[in-house]
Amino acid sequence: MEAREEAFRRASRFAVPAYFAVNLVIAAANALQSQWYYAVLAVCALVLTPVLSLFYRIIRRRRSYQLDLLVYLYVFLLYTLGIVLRLYTITRWYDKFAHTLSGVVIALFAILLFQLISPEKDMGRARFPLAACFVFFTVAGVAGIWEIWEFLVSLVFGTDPQRVASTGVTDSMVDMIVCVLGGLLFLPSLWAYMNRKKTSFLLGVFESVCRSADDA
Image (cartoon, rainbow, N blue to C red; front, top):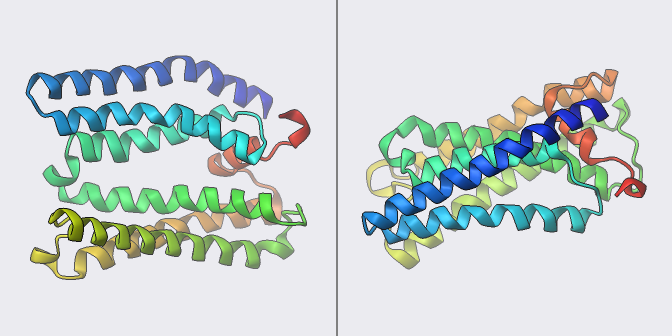
């Protein structure tokens, strides 16, 4: 565990500055073209660093470089490429990929939350049904809340992020379905972990976060 965490710590020395540099270059390029909206969006991506620091303070755990790099990659794919570079508009399938990936990442945070708030810290096989239900309903709830948010945005700004004009409710429903599917894809690895302590990449990230608070 410590060896893997150290490897991710070394990788973060290059990955995080690269994340900053790419977003700043994108911001500058948009500013030069007077695309101020996208320039500001690119700069907003830099807020991720203090948000992560606040997250660790709230959960009272020391930093997990494995989780850090996963989150940086996730935000880069969905926010920087999807929104700032407009891949959601240019490539239709990218939106579905993003929602599916979101389901997997939300599932990881859901099982982390399950372990943090559970009075029993045991992650044995007997608790898998409860853990699986918690993950499923968390992913489904977040997927629904996101679609509600997009609907409110369309009402306030007159945009159509859900493509209601061209697809009716189909786009929103497919987004929620693939997000839940992403959460379900997480469950086999969770079962393997809780049943046989077989650690996949994502459950390795989970373990790196759930170290004792005494190590914080």
